[in-house]
Amino acid sequence: MNIVVCVKHVPKCAEAEIRIDPTGRDIEKHGLVYDINEWDDYAVEEAVRIKEKFGGSVTVVTVGPEEANSTLRKCLARGADNAIRVYDPKLVGSDPYVIAKVLYKVIKNLQFDLVLTGVMAEDDGSATVGPMLAEFLKIPHATMVKKIELKDHKAAIVHRELEGGLMEVVEVKLPALFAIQTGINEPRYVSILGIRRAMQKEIKVLGLKDLSLDESEVGYAGSWTLIDKLFVPPAEKVCQYLKGSPEEVATQILGILKSRGLF
Image 1 (cartoon, rainbow, N blue to C red):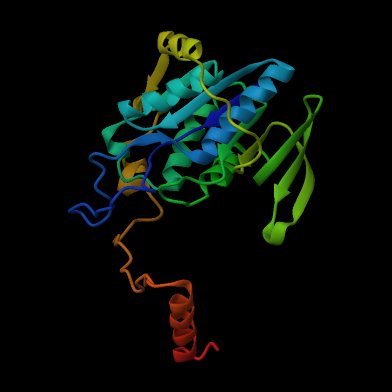
Image 2: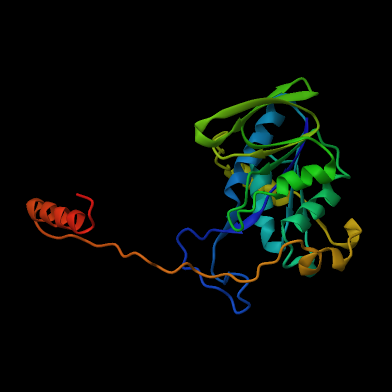
């Protein structure tokens, strides 16, 4: 079972102070901590588990600068066999459509039974790269996948998470693409030995010429969507701290509820 996993090197912004850069179309990234996209982390773990059960290989692919090598090496340390990184300065500003097209140009030349992606990326949240990549590859796909049961090497029973806590179970012919939801597994810790081995493995780097792509097909020029403006949402509500004894705080809460017509 040969599996390709698409991963993304993203900034971790949950506890960082976000500032908009001078262009107004991106955030200031200096000083931010980067790591593998959360959803992709689960996709890599699922791929490695399938390989351990059925044999085959796992290849991880990313689009990003040299700094993204750290994410690829983390995947190699976890059990991936091969890593490919695509980059060219002209890729800056590429939207999800362009990224899907770039990934297609790489993956179409690989042998694969499964392509796994995360459901979405932490930075842009578009959740569209997976389905668009499947369309480029002309293979069936399923999103929000929480469980994969392989039937020999020809089909998979896939459990999809729907709204309201519902689950959908579908049978999908292989090869196929599955967009993985968090919670499908518990990603393993990377061992020191795994890290050492990963540092010795080659990361194949490709440019636009290797993929027969012209600069007019990538970046802002090739994108279907453009970010016009980013802004930090203004704080409209302020947290109010109540002080005093339990009886005094209870009285204050009652007063607030009455003043707002809630009691």
